Length: 190
Image 1: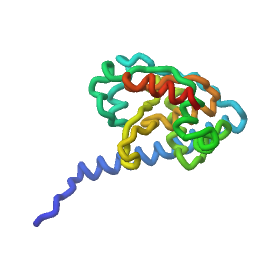
Image 2: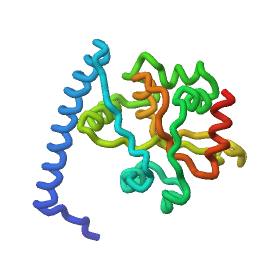
Image 3: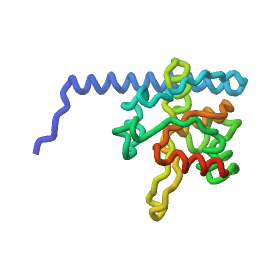
């Protein structure tokens, strides 16, 4: 059986894509150095613009990062609620001590649960004036919960870490409508 052949055009496209990716990685590395310096010098000051109107949330972006039942009817099934970030993280991490380990208030870079390149791209995204999607949280069974509903931060670890580092108290969360009261009561009980 003949192996599929790569055309000269396909090879050239791959080469260009590879070179562009390499150039982008170098650019991100330089940006990371710059942003790290800002954090060391306490010069990291960002204006976060959250998209808290569900009808205006970039659904294409959201569908790339999260796959949850009901996202096809986002406006019907979900709502945006501003919640206390510390309380959400304390509940998510099952206590303040663990939350401080996973989402330290005084350290943004080089943690076990986040990649520096994603933090760099997030800061770049914000500095470019782009609107952030709310962090997605919810309660649902998982493979380890024996059918019990478990609280989960589905999407937004890097945004949560950055907001915590910037000492932002309340931020928007995207939550299933039927879970809002349950989640609010749970995080307020921490």
